[in-house]
Image (cartoon, rainbow over all chains, first blue to last red; front, side, top):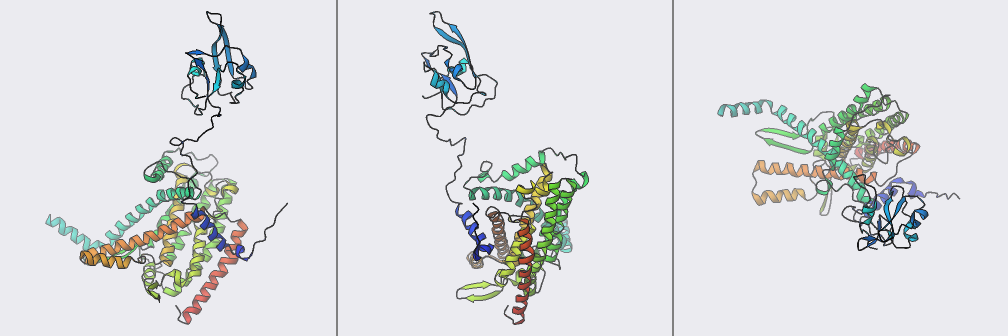
Amino acid sequence: MIVKNKPGLFQRFYLLEALAGLKITISKIFKKKVTIQYPEERREYSDRYRGMHYIKSVNGVENCTACMLCPTVCPAECIHIEAGERDDKEKYPVKFEIDSLRCCFCGMCEEACPKDAIKLSNIYEMSQTTREAYDKEYLMEQRGHK
Amino acid sequence: METILSTLNGLWASNANLITTAVMAVVVAVSLLQVVPLMVWLERRGSAVMQKRHGPNRLGPLGLFQGIADGIKAVFKEDNPPAHVHKFFYRLAPVVCLIPAYMTFAVIPFASSITIGGHTINFQVADLNVGFLYIFSIASLGVYGIIMAGWSSNNKYSLLGSLRSSAQMISYELSLGLSVIGILMIFSSVKLGDIVRQQGELLVQLGPIAIPKWGFFVQPLGFLIFLVSAYAETNRLPFDLPEGESEIVAGYHLEYGSMHFALFMMAEYINMTVAAALTVTLFFGGWQMLPGLPQLHQLIIEQFQLVALAGDGLRVLFEFGSFAAKTAFFLWLFVWVRWSLPRFRYDQLMDLGWRVMLPLSLVNIFVTGILIYYKVV
């Protein structure tokens, strides 16, 4: 529906309306700024924020048993695992890589994992100056607070 | 040493006019250049605070050096004119825009005179007897630069922008010229120095408040028309149709980059400064001191027993300060209006120019004539 506002006499006399507009803008000058000055100030994110991945480890041994549930459930197909066998016949991932450019940070790997191994931390600054992949050593760094 | 001093003295005595004018021309030109980065900063910070943002605040105190950084960036950027432009006029256009903007400031007085060694120095680069007519005639040359830019860019949006600009200039130059006729009738002079001097006189005394004969008080309608027309002449919002980002991309300077674009920006800001200074000179008493300052000046002279020259120097400083403060206010008004009001539609702009501003300015002249005939003002 088209609403037609017929301007009154004062509205048609543009100058007074212009002065009203000037009053509005000048009143904003000493208001609190909404900008977050990024490197110094940071936005508070929720604890459920899904950021950079890591593999949870206990005493330096990863929880992962290379069960392949996460690459199966991953909609972006960005997790690549090569399974191997430890001396005590336990299955473990020889290679564990995440293609972070393909990852859509849906968190389904975290949901699927029965061993609580792959986790998403709340780190959101993921740009790098080198071309290193998100390989196993990188992911084993315990970043998250969860 | 003696001979050098006496030679210098002789030089001063014989060429005082030339020397002071040359020095003043250089000082004015250089300080006018300093207005540009300051205005860029003011524009960006001003728009930011009105939108609850911070604006550039990293470089220097309060981000004041941002304009210098922008300038350096513009100089070192690659100058790469598109293949389809007419190279000669493309390169000439920004200069043609900038030079008239610079020239117009020459006749604006920024303080009263001071006498040094028997020689009176007027704080005005050139006291021409055509006064503000000079400003109007030179300022309208600036539109040639815009048309050149639009035509030589060989781009439909640029051409539309420059066409709009020329139409707008013609429409509003009429009311701009007519709005100051009232001032001309009251002060019977076109020389800006005379006009400012006469504005120091008393108009009415309302109890303790003395209202000076400022152009604003004798020509309120003339001031309004002048201000609106000045906004249209400098292509500022709400009349920035030549640029009209949402309609014609960027208008006449669409094909420009690096320092060529920066020259257009400089021309715009210097035009704004001249418009603000002219508004102050014609309607707000120019270098006449702001209320309270004459008393303060008197007080300081009595307190410190200042001799003639020191007192005069202080007076010039106060007058220049008053002029700068008033001009700064009108520059701020330019920024304030820009970030408050939306752009006019093109037909509304023409409607306002021809059917509102022009009759109003004629009425203003008529009423002023009647008032002068009956000796009211």
